[in-house]
Every structure is written in C-alpha cells, then in structure tokens.
Length: 95
Image 1: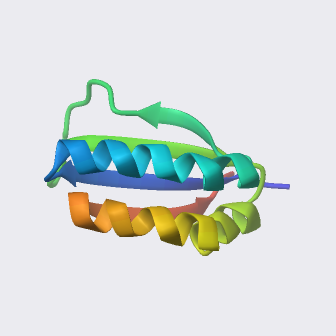
Image 2 (image 1 turned 90 degrees about the horizontal axis):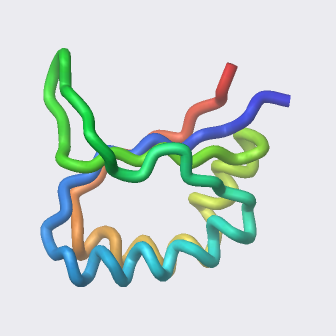
C-alpha cells in the first residue's frame, strides 16, 4: 500500500501561537501514525514562490493522512494554526 503525505508550506505570523499549534497537533499525529520527514530546515526555492517554512509528514497510507486532517483532534489544533500562520497544505499519495 502506498504511503500518504502531508506537504505544508508555512509563513508564521505569531511564533508563540504557532508553538501552541505544534503542541496541539501532536495528539492527531500520534493517533494516525504521522511521522515528520521534514520540519523546517534549510532550503532554496529554485522555481516559483516559497514560504519561510516547509513540513512533510508521512503516514502509513493516503487514507490515514486524510483521516488525520479531517479528525476532530486535528480540527481543534487547526484553529491555532489558522490564527498563527498562513499555510498551503496538500495531502498526496506516495509512489
């Protein structure tokens, strides 16, 4: 079965509130088996536009990745995310 991934591109507007979001999202990621592959780090935008922060989270399946995003546990954390940052997030099936 193909793995599922969240790919997020983030601009943090309120660092303190964003830290609260990071603490709050741990419950959903643990429940659905999310593992951080990329969390910040150096990067170069070679084509197009970019945000200041990038995240890749791996799940055992595409379905698990979607279930996590749509879960009540993540929805509670997402309110903190929306208040603290601008985000582009996709869920994608791996090869």
